[in-house]
Length: 122
Image 1 (cartoon, rainbow, N blue to C red):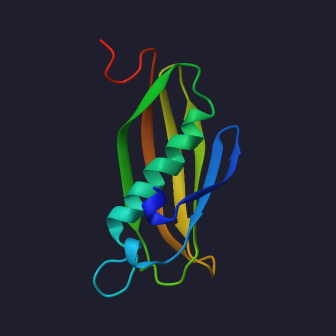
Image 2 (tube, helix red, strand yellow):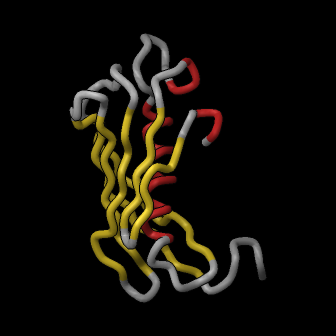
C-alpha cells in the first residue's frame, strides 16, 4: 500500500477512510486510475472498517464487488468503508472512491469472515 501512496486518515467504529494521490504508481495506460488499484484500496480500507468490529484474531475477504462509475483522473482520491451489518462471523461493508471534486469513481460491497485463528495457523 505504501507503493500506492495510501494513507489511512480516519478510523472509528465501523468506518475507515484513506487517501492517495494520482501518481505513475496508480495509473494505467492513458493516465487514468487503474482498476486494480481501485480494488486494492477498497479491499484495504473496507477491511480496516471490518477490523474495527472484529473480536477474533484475524479476518479474510470473502467477496468484493466493485462498480467502476467514472474514470479517475483528478486526485487526490479518498476511499471510505462503512460496515453495513456485522454478524458473529460475517460482516458486510460498503465502500466508495471519490476524486478531488467529490465525483463518485467507484462503489463497492464486500463481505469479510471473522476468524478465531490466524490465517495459516492449523
